[in-house]
Amino acid sequence: MELLSALKVQGRVISALTLRETRSRYGNSKLGYFWALFEPFAHVLVFIGIFTALGRAPPIGESTGLFILTGIMPWLLYNNVVNGVMGGLQANKALLGYPQVMPMDISISRVLLESATLLVVMLIFIVIAMYLGLSIRIDSFLGMIMPMGLLIIFAMGVGLINAAIIERYPSYRSIYSALSRPLYFISGVFFTADFLAPEIYDYVSINPLLHLIEWFRTGFYTSFNSDLYDPKYAIEVCVSFFAVGLLAERFNNKKARQI
Amino acid sequence: MIEFQNVCKVYDTKNDKNIILDNVSFKFPEKKNIGVLGVNGAGKSTLLRLVAGSEYPNSGKIIRKGKYSWPLGFTGSFHHNLTGIENLRFACRIYDADIKYVTEYVKDFAEIGVYIDEPIKTYSSGMRSRLAFALSMAIDFDVYLVDEIMGVGDKGFRAKCRNAFQEKRECSSIIMVSHDMNTIRDYSDVAIVLTGEKLEIHEDVDQAIDLYNNFNS
Image (cartoon, rainbow over all chains, first blue to last red; front, side, top):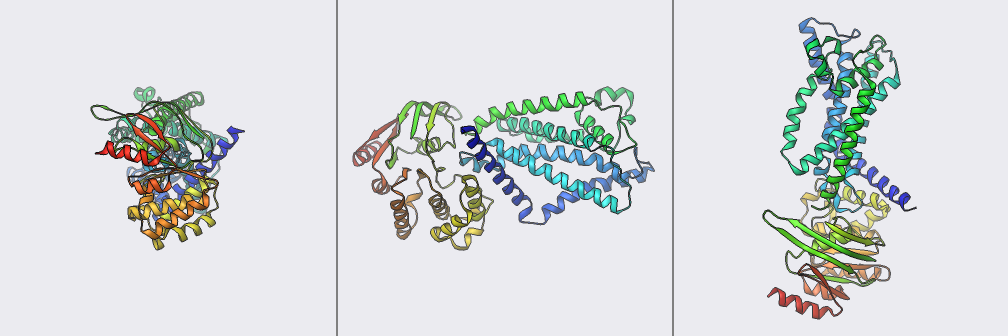
């Protein structure tokens, strides 16, 4: 009974927070919507330019745009969820004045908003691509949803860990953003694992994001089946990060309420 | 009902520890309006936040039964980048209150006019406290936790606050912190003095105020 009413309160808080986050992102200016669509589009344009200049064909399929898109969407999902969770507490600290608002609720609302945004943007791009006459045959929906779900869990874990570290060492924020920049280049956004030189293959394949993006593309393209991705490895890493993230949150949560 | 059991509250400062409460076990008197007295920095606002549950003790337990308001103060729970109305809606949602009713009530009570649609950061402290007070009055609580904000505003507004409380007297009480002894005298049935990391209850409010004045001088 007590648990049920506590869950009800938590549900109300999370929905109120999600509404508030959505409003502050998209409510006051049209720029929010524009940016959500433009950011992946900009990445795609840049790589179409590079691929064309180098005279290279996309590794899978016929469309460079579609290839980049299937890499950039999972990447942005990861990146936006991490950044959202990481900055959520700082941006909403005032709301902790309400006793029923828990730091975790803020994180959950940010994960919901970022994931929903990326999902909608992806659907829009797929519709546009179809409209442009690209033939899209999605190989396996489950093969796309699984890696996306794991990506969200992984990103939330990383975000919570980061938030806990930032609470103690604020300068970690810039260290993380410096560390995460090279991650973009080794996560398979603009290549597939087949292109990796054997000397670095073992090292680069530690990166769970590479596994997830390869997995995602395997689900998307009928003509592609990655040798690299290992579902067991990906699940283990993502779930571990998520668990550590929850633990970090527990410590951080107490600290946030002790000011 | 609110009870502290072996509550310790400490703030870490750069070179030292600032002890607010040291192993305090204390039962707050029920259904009484309580004024909290203490010198600057003794931790009156902290005490209120502990009672509300928006801050946790370092150790010990706080047992709370009934519906307590958030600590109504100058800073508190409002998000500075959101407008008054957005903050209001947020509070309604998390307390499961009727948004339409609360909006009407607050517009009428708070007298902040068009500022209700402006971000909180553009508010004066008087406007903030009027909004906080009106909002909390529109939502029903068993205990209102008021941090300083009753002393502000003009005479008319203070009278309004007083009337609003009179109406709620039957089913609600108040725990308040104020530097203004007249406000304390006005509202409180009993006084709690926060001193030397302990809580002391005084049935006689005037006596407590005298004691407090002695501390202060």
